[in-house]
Image (cartoon, rainbow, N blue to C red; front, side, top):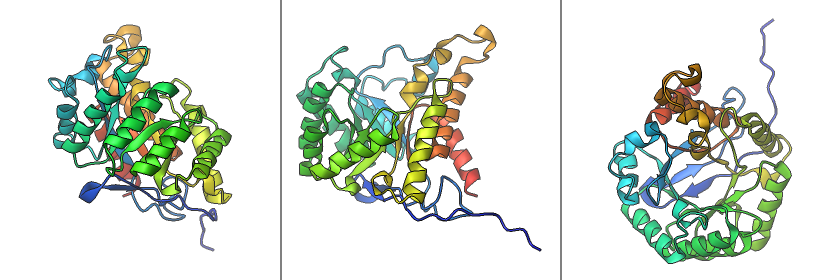
Length: 313
């Protein structure tokens, strides 16, 4: 008698969301199985990787993270183009670190102008990430939405405290929002409902459950993302049937382990350590259900792409 692999019956499907405009627009979602369970159903496209760009010169970055972008870290347009031209970036995530009220506190008009310059200079989808300060993000992201009308940017993080203003701008100026909640499946569903009640269609929402790197609670992030996928695919929970983005790069590269010098605490080569930490953290989140991963180091991205190719060969 032939052995048959037991298979789960899936009744749900992750909705497809189109990001960006033109020939380089990216579609995410569409899977009808748990991540990489290709023997049970369809995963029509691989997850996407967005490369980080900052709107101001990074401070306190590890040398290994700065090295690939030498000469362009003071120019977000040049930085974004280098990511695309030299490292093959499919998407760009512009981190608006300079708008943080506890940092440079740059104004909305100046930030929006930088975003527009980057958006006009590239042809791949652009994620614009604020500082999670509600008052400042409302000022900045609503202005960005207006200045970049019709470019279908991905604006985030959009949280319960600012979802009405930013969500309304996304509707009015045709952008996608990142619904961001603090590692809780019920809060994630609630925010998606609130955005829907506001009038933001599902095709303009992706979810950010907030994530961490290996060694900093990634197992809890994994379990929450896993439950989101279970609810979406086997429990017909339509409000969780949305693609997931994981903004993991800055979580990994701010950890103390990537800043320790070579061979300190018997941890070996610092550059290799940082690259492996990022690659392993990203891969863990992809196995949990991530559709978009924000990453930093080109060599870590290369490792992840090789693992994805092996999983789907």
